[in-house]
Length: 305
Ligand code: SF4
Image: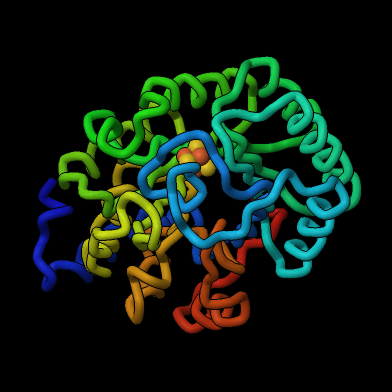
C-alpha cells in the first residue's frame, strides 16, 4: 500500500526500482501486441466499463464474427508491424460452437502462414474449448480478473468473480499460457488495486495487461474521472513488484491517462498494444515506435518470446 500512497517526489525512485526488475527479466525490449476486435458489441453481459455491453448506449461499430480470411489478414498486417502477438477478441459471455470453429480455422492458418504468436479472448471457456484452441495452435488465452474480488459486484451483475477465476484455472490446466489483467480507475480503493496485483500472481498469470479506465460516453461509468498519470505509474510499479518475471503490458487508456508521461510506463512495463484498442484508437504505430526508441528501448523480436 505504501507504493500506491507514495509521494510525487518519490516517483522516480519507485520507477527505478521497478525498472531494475524489468531489465533483469526483459532487458530493454518492448513486445508489441496487435488487438483484433473480431466480433463487436451487443454483448448480453453488463460490465459497467464496457462500450460493448448490451445496456451501453455507446456509439461503436457492431458486427458478428469476422470471416477466417479477415482474421488471418489482420495477423498478416500485425506481422508487418513487427508485432510479437496477435490477439483475437470477441464480445460475448462465452464462445459458441461456430465461433470456436472459425477461430480455430483462423488459428491453424495463421500458425502455418505467419510468424506471430497467437492469443484469443473469447469469454468464459470450457475445458474442451480450451483444449481445442490449443490443438489449433493458439498459444495464449486472455481472461481478465478486471478488479478485486470485493469490488467485482460493483461493476458486473451478470457473472461473478468466481466465474472469471474458474476460466483462468481452465486455461492453465489446458496448457495454454494465461493472459490475465485488469482495469483500474473504476472507483475501486487502493486496497482493491493491491488485491488485484496479488490475485494475478495467485492465478499464475503469464502475461498481465493493465488497463486504465478512459470513461466512455454511454457506459455506466461514463461519469468517472480518469486516474492521474502518476497514479497509473504507481500502479504499474506495484504490479511489477508483485509479478517480477511476468510480461506486464501498459494497455488500454495508455495515451489518455498517461499523456506526456507515457514513456515512463516502459520502465515497469515491457509490452504495449500498438494500433489502438477494441473500440478506441491509439496514438498510432509510428508514434509508438518513436516513443520506444526515444528512451533507448527497442521492439522485442518474436524469437525472444
Ligand atoms: S463480457 Fe466482455 S464484451 Fe461483454 S460486456 Fe463484459 S467486457 Fe464487454
